[in-house]
Length: 401
Picture 1 (spheres, helix red, strand yellow):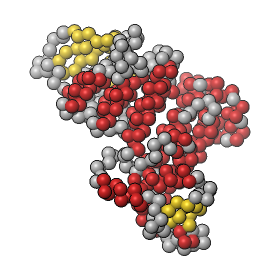
Picture 2: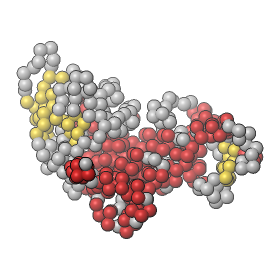
Picture 3: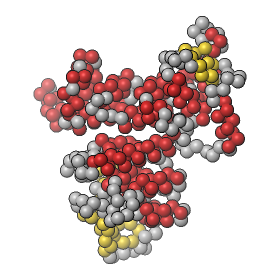
Picture 4: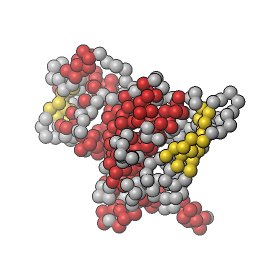
């Protein structure tokens, strides 16, 4: 059967520490977890990986801090084939939200007649203030359906990074269910990200009248001094002071010799743009109220959004757009997204493209992908180097030397 079962075994207690050992049997091997009874962060961590929604909710309601990492100095093998590499001076930072994402991967369907609990667990963690952007380091995933060898996703992975990695590497077993639930997790985490500010910190509560004031300014013609003329003829109004505060691109422009908006290119505040009105509405909404329309451009056209966000220096909108681009990776668009990543110098998207092509080599036989060899020789050579196994790369370098 799928899922994880747990049995309790009595072990000698260490002096001054009340503890017990839990044996966790996964689909491939037997793991042991030891944690003190008194440490609630570890209890929450274990409850998440066991997909015990009732226990997770109980700990959260009892005031357990979802942002306090479990002390894993004595934990090496964790259920669901996760290895946390720790040392006394450098403990792992695998957070509760990362654990919830991993639980989505390993528990995508109902167990023993119970409703699927992985997404509710993730949702409740986020609603109780868990940081959706904390970065994990020093961990290895084992046996995630595609190989029997350890796979290390790399250091400094956010929960979304981990979810995208797992989605791309989902094997045949429960593939459809896992992809579906990981997509749900990514959507949930992305929406959580969209209400955070540009430096990735949780936003402070804003009084409703203040929020309504900023909403009333968004696209308002009153007192506006910048007018975006979009490709379809739509005119969107904005305010120079807001644009300068939100975007280094506009700040530098307005502080420069063209700052009076009186030059011939932007006379009377007219700002011609080749972008669609839908894209520009989303960008302005992000700059004014820090929020994107749900199911808008971020889902339908993240490529254009990435281009504008990169041009205007909206770093956090760039990250949201990158995540959406990576989610859309498939055989048909792998080349286009790889070229987009190269154009906008996005190592995050480029790495995802390399990994997707490495795991889906049939992409290389497509005529459009093969044409890349003549269109961009440097990118084609970089692709070849990245998808070549390390052992072969070493042998090739040895022959050259």
